[in-house]
Image (cartoon, rainbow, N blue to C red; front, top):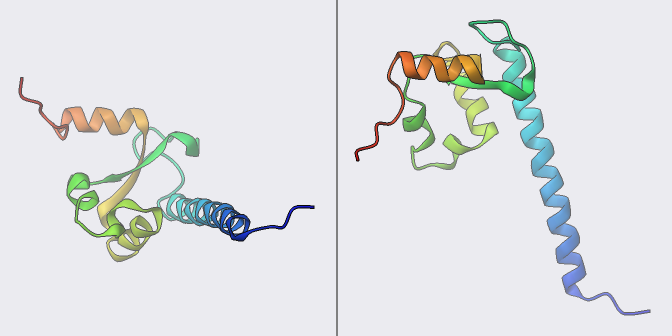
Length: 111
């Protein structure tokens, strides 16, 4: 048998970390969906694969680009929802895009 070198331990640690962070993200997303009602605020669609967290008054890109890690992680979003519950809602992907177009929240590209 070959001796197991230090690389093997590092690989196992990386695999463990990957699974741990995936489970952490899944738990945070589940808490977010449950807290915000588990269905689209506009149409009532409830398939969690298509539900998205929406900033009611816009500003999602500002929140994501705050420069700290909190704006880009499920746990960071969960913390933001706990602090400002009434600033967020759940929308299905279709309703979220319709809202973005209606309120002109989409980025305008110059040609």
